[in-house]
Length: 255
Image (cartoon, rainbow, N blue to C red; front, side, top):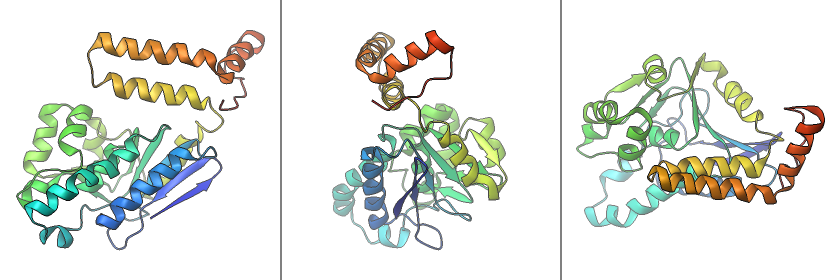
């Protein structure tokens, strides 16, 4: 596990050959990389990438098979929070999915704001075939993304979802040839480099928090975030640039 930073884009690189099995060490590495990416001012957007052949094929079942109920009670909160750390990165996050994204791998991809996948990708929540259910957000994030009935089909059956179906149901946002996945994800991330970082953060927080509440409360969240941005340098720059030169010409500072 490592965070690589280049040209304003941070890549959280999953690196546990051959299948990037998400054992406890990987989970904690994900948390550490997410916190680092969140705190670095030189990172404008984040790509989560497992390599050319596989995103992550799921949890380390050999490790999990030896765990008791008491063991999992103690561990399950940390498992969920390590993935939630990715969802809470206050910057745009893109999952670059090649090959398998199964179980915990699919749940990790669900924590991103966008998912770019290769034509060879297969996503799914096969935990039911092990006699358990998703435990790192699958039963909650998947239905919020694709709807309850589609999520139930995927989770109840444990089947794999191919790239074309994943695109059709909104599980992924873009499908490209497998060898172009990382480049396509970086291209998407690059659109946020040099952008109004505080406004992007506010937009992400307003959307994510608003989805968890009623409309009236969500509108209040939006109002507070909107009003708060009038204290930023970027708001002044953006509006002055618009008045002087029209839209799309502002040079933001991230402050």
